[in-house]
Amino acid sequence: MNKIAVIGAGSVYTPELVTEFFKDGGKLVPFDEMALMDIDRGRLAAVGGLTQRMARRQGVRGEISLTTSLTEAIRGAKFVIVQIRVGGNRARALDETIPYRYGVIGQETTGPGGMFKALRTIPAVVEIAKTVKRVAPRAWILNFTNPSGLVTEAVLKAVPGVKMLGICSAQLGREWWVARALGVKRERIKVRSAGLNHLAWVYRVSVDGRDVTDRLFNLPDRRLKHLGWPVDLMRSIRMVPIGYLWYYYYSDKMLPHSRPGHNRAKRVMEIERILMKRYADPALDEPPKELSLRGGSGYSLAMSTVMNALTGRKPCTIPMNVQNRGAVEGFARDQVLEIDSTLRPAGVTPVAIPLRDLPPHLLGLTHQVKAYETLTAEAAMTGCYHTALEAMITHPLVPNATVGQRILDEMLKAHRKYLPKFR
Image (tube, rainbow, N blue to C red):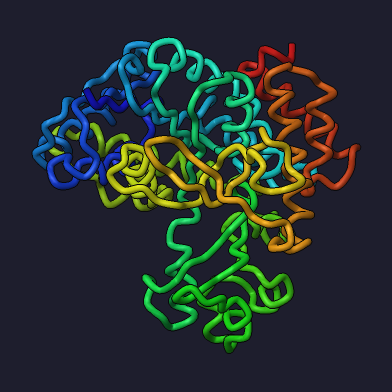
């Protein structure tokens, strides 16, 4: 039996997540049962109901079941998809606004906000992983819960033997960006990237197997701008940053987005109120157009790609959050990096990267943020205040220990309901 369990299925993302699964009547990602699990009965009923109607509309034969039981959802599953948000968007709002009071960016996966999302999330995902190991020991845990790489590292250390991948859609389309700038077909492009989740760079580009990295950065400004970054920055570092590095390179410009009343959490809560009302409409049987306002596009494609590779339908090599296992010199074997990895039924193998291929700029920032992540993972499992403070002041967006400790103390107090280990 091919069973898929979705933990945190009350998320408004679920209709996006299952889109690829339901294509061709469920033939793209075959399953007999999809168990949707959430602790919030109301959200589960609304989102799960829409999901069931979507499946019927597209002629999917597999059963879509709803449950509030973690064990029931996981038992017999081959894949366990995790997409939870401990504390909901109210906790996210605190993550975004408290650091701002101290002149520091508040963001849900980066800096102090990302740290506290991880502190709340890791113990919960560890419990999910323990349940998987007990009732479905051969299942793959596919983690979408952010900060994906940090959470994945913590769980793999805390629950030895469990099979888990950290997945992020942020790198989807990286070849398309480069192909557009170079003016060649996407199929001819191969790129290599390295770093961490939400801290990665494309460092090499080839066309038809020939290295064209220098050619890329020598393009005229008007074409290099297709990559979405200031051309002087790209030419200086000789890499293409991916997504969230805006918070590091241009923190002064990103800081105003955290101000109260203007932060993303407030907008997200407004969007989700609209979406939940739409989802509850019994006549709706497809994702509403308002879902595009929530962001997160590409989740379904990323997940279906991973699942089809791990079942042998279409093996591939794509960026994944995996344990290093010697792939990149200088990082511990059990530290999780976001690097190209080959996915097959036999398992996942990170592609080795010679140290000489990685620019010092990439290595410097990656080592610092990886140190912060490893400390945060330890703090989440131990509840040690001093380890948490060390993690906070290690992050490059925190200017000094004085500010770091003030942010830590206020956020520990604000989130104490979800941080019992710190009492």
